[in-house]
Image 1: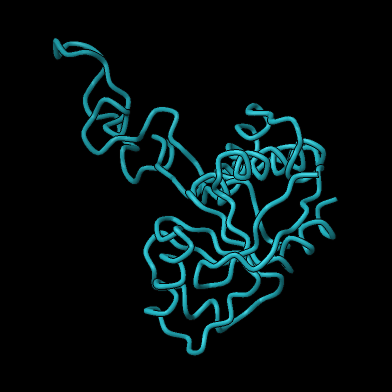
Image 2: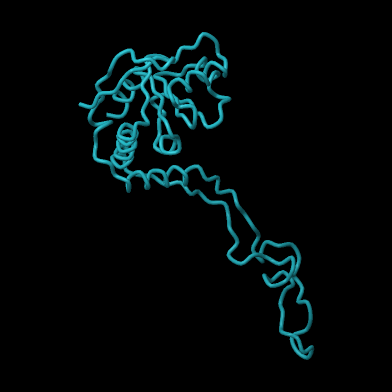
Length: 207
């Protein structure tokens, strides 16, 4: 089983932890990660774009000029797509972009990203993220001590308002509960800062 050091918020080594092989020592599937990230981004799309077709644009009910004898091309409406103010050809309409993926594929992608974080030294396990005060300055100092001051994904076992208030104003830093950890957020952050209790929660929820 892979092992990792446990640090405190000062960056000092206070022990070690054996990690679950399913979560942190699996075969990495880049394709699974790609599919899940694409799915998450698609599911986030609002799909509210809309434009009017020639049938929906106001006006244009009368034939603009007679069919023959003018020397011009025949026209039936001034709301045809080639007229200024006319409708849009194949106009985009509101739609739902979301779709579902198999649970096994989503799990495989999550295991792959967690394994990658460990292999690339992007996993930082801390004993606790308890700060004396909910101050951004203290949170920034803690991340600096953990060598994770840029684009850190901070994960706690349960919702912790004190931790959230401390880290929320730091650029590139996001805070989440272990049960809400997802592939897209793991991929777009450089470091995963997670408490040892949160790792136990990951094992409970995702295995």
